[in-house]
Length: 216
Image 1 (tube, one colour):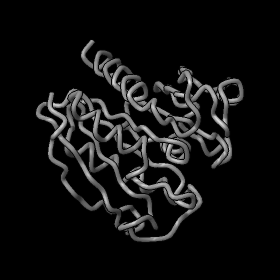
Image 2 (cartoon, helix red, strand yellow; image 1 turned 135 degrees about the vertical axis):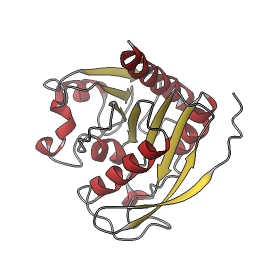
Image 3 (cartoon, one colour; image 1 turned 120 degrees about the horizontal axis):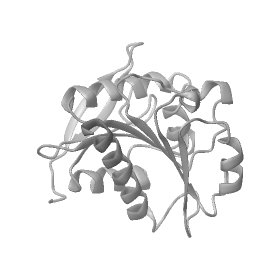
Image 4 (cartoon, helix red, strand yellow; image 1 turned 120 degrees about the vertical axis):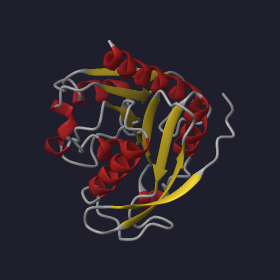
């Protein structure tokens, strides 16, 4: 499938009224949908950061609808940074927008770094599962990571040389999580330069598994 699927600019509205800048790419007859949540806004993170941008390019080429957005206070989004808690409303807004565009396929939230922690703090009936890419697992308190005890599947993609949450630490922190798989991204650090194709392939497999569960 071609990777020149057009980009649709759109605006999301969070439940507290904050408007968010977003972009969507919709292949014909998508087999799944992925909401992309970017890294920490206070350290330069945006929807145009490396992993988020590469997934936004690669996943639609593999037949998956993709929506990326800027958290509140970033670039063209309104509002101000909320420490990860207000940003949960932004994730919910993204889920709603993507679910409306692709209601018949499984929807997965894929967050990188800060976006991973915020994503797994959100429980929404429209989510089929979570892909947590290089999750720090310390942006929010363990009790706030509500998806950790949700029965739906979670995939942790942890870089082998992650500077903030290496595999052994991530395994210990997620030991009590339900329905959770941890995969190590070999040769990668937290920023995953040169390893984004591997991450995209893992996300594709995870979404395909959710589609198989739905059809089976």
